[in-house]
Image 1 (cartoon, helix red, strand yellow):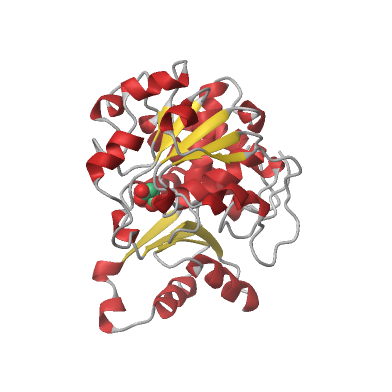
Image 2 (tube, protein in one colour):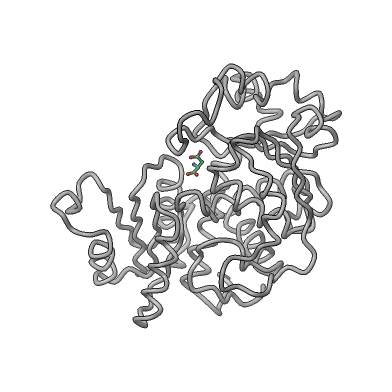
Amino acid sequence: MSNWNHKHIIDLSKFSLDDYKTVLELTTRFQDVSTTRSRKLPALQGRLITTLFFESSTRTRSSFELAAKRLSADVQNFSVATSSLSKGETPLDTILTYIAMGADILIIRHDSTNVPNDLAQYIDDNKINTSILNAGDGFHSHPSQGLLDLFTLASFFNPNNPSPESLLNKKITIVGDILHSRVARSNLWSLTGCGADVTLCGPKSLLPDEFSDFVLNPPPGQKNDPITHRGSITINRSLKDALRGSDAVMTLRLQKERMHQNMLTDLDTYHKNYGITHDRLKWCEKKVPVLHPGPVNRGIEISSQILEDDSISLIKNQVSNGIPTRMSLLYLLANRNIADPS
Ligand code: ASP
């Protein structure tokens, strides 16, 4: 397993093939831990992990909490509703309070893009040892979801050895509200980074043409892409054409809370054009798995029948794989440069 050099995990644009390999290998090992009787490892005993969610969450927060507990860390959960934010404290002062309590890793979700990045910058400028793990910032990034999706797909294609190579030349189709999706953006970095070709499908209002250049434009300040050969990104607005030849389909929630008015005609038309159903999956020309990061709008982006069809839906796998994936990320951040739990 190679050295881990990231102090913070903000997005996947700086991940190399070795980083993906390390995460997938470690996740496979931590997945085995959940089948043991104690389900726990002492790896992070005495470490303090704090979850700070300024935006709501069902899966991500509880999955991180469980992952931290499985590694025997101490866990603190900050909740906006019961915090001093209501007394006028600024988010930065709240965060500094948790750093002063000795947090080794802060897992943060915020509806504003760049809050985790700005915080990481502040921490580095002030020579603080705490790591920042982005659990979703606005439209920008949701790296742990991108990595658990990668592990889920790699395990599907290659159950005995889920590795980055398992994705090479696979055609993955992502359907829906790409514009507002931090999950889609994280998957674009990780899937193309492992050599998959991604087809994006959705109406123009939710999938602007610029997305075809997404991985060609490194974020500001980053000159070199650590990946030498990325898979392609293609936009196809016809669901029938986009699904043809796909090896897997990922559908996304319509993020109504982030939409301005008039972005969609109506939900029935959306479902008719882009909803994933058993009938439309036939356009793939073979049986393919379907992923969705949740929460799901049943009957809009995906039919209830697909949701309940365990021979097609990988949604439960995504949820359960989230725990060992997040264990890996916590482990790697807490043990930078000594990445081996054995
Ligand atoms: N749970 C995912 C996120 O936080 C996807 C979604 O909300 O639709 O981005």
